[in-house]
Length: 152
Image (cartoon, rainbow, N blue to C red; front, side):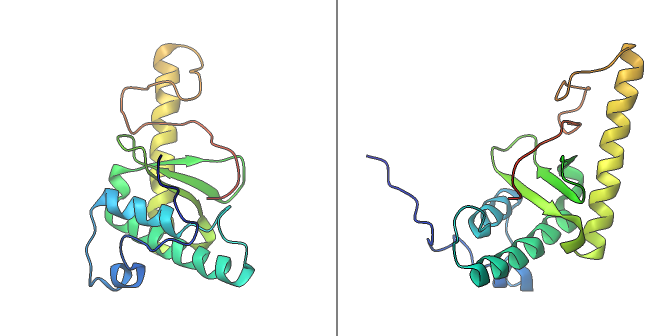
């Protein structure tokens, strides 16, 4: 019988040690830590959830500052919210509120979003018609689909 994951399980790495630079994680480890910290649908206590959202945003900022070129940043149906994905991993960086990211991370996310949308638009022009959302445009990181749902 598979073991159920506790909603309040201990994290694989101490987020504060990661943010202070004391502990250096791989891209995949950082994605997993962001998922672990994310309180969406896991934490009932509002104060705890708010503290975890702040921590999640700080980790997402670190993710973008270190690995922006490796990520797909995609628009969501909610203004000011973007999805952070790595095309090769099942794990993702969740939904990020642009206004909660560091200034540098926000700049990187917006630049990455513009670059990927430009590739999508250019691919439509070359093809001579609209692409279906999520259709490959020649680069594994050039996703331009919208994702919806609650902030993660």
